[in-house]
Image (cartoon, rainbow, N blue to C red):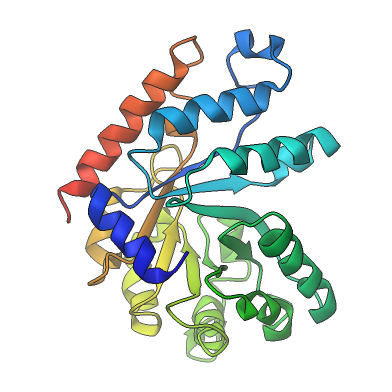
Length: 266
C-alpha cells in the first residue's frame, strides 16, 4: 500500500484507527472453541464487524507463533480475510544481520504479503535496510515505546540527544515518509513534539490508547501533521470488549466510538 492510498482511506473513512488482532485463545468466547479453528473464527467475526471503522489491522505474530504450525496457518488465513484497501501490519519486531533480515523481509512481504512490519533497530542500519528495498511496503521502526523498560535504553542520552532521537535520525537516512513509520507509545504523548522535530512527515504507529493509559486528545495535539500522520492502535479495548456471543457487535460499537472521536479531528 502506498502513502497516498493510506491517506485516501483515512480521508474516506474519517478514521485513523488500527485494530490489533492480538488474539489469545484463552480470552476468546468459549463457544468458539468448538470450531475447527477458533482463532480464525474469532478474527473473521472481528474483521467483518469492524472493517468499516479502521484503516489498518496489526497482527501480533507472537500470539500465532505460540500455537505452532496451526497458529501460522491461522495467521495466513486471517490475512486473506482483510480487505485489500486496509493496511496489514505484521507486529513481528524483526531485525538481524543483513542476510537474515533479507530472509525475514522475503517471508513477510513476498510469501505472506503483509504491507508492513515492525522492526527492532538496535543491531544497526544494516539489520533493517533490507526491508526498505520492497516497493509499496513499509518498515515500522521502534522509536519510543510505552513499556517501562523503554527507560533502560530508548530514553538514555547520548551526548545531547536521547537514543530514540538517534534512532529516528539514522533511520530517516534509510527510508523516507513513503516507506518508513515509527512506533511511538501513546503514553509518551508530549515527546511527540520532539519526535516530530526529526520526523515531521512520517506516519507514526501509536499503541497504548485505552488499556495502557494513553490519551487520544494528547496524541493528536502533539503528533498530528498535515496528512494526519498517525495510526492509533487499539487491541484489547476493542477485540475483548465482550466475552459473550455478541462479542463482534460490541467490538464494532467500541471501534465506531473511537472512529467517531477521530472524525472530530479531521
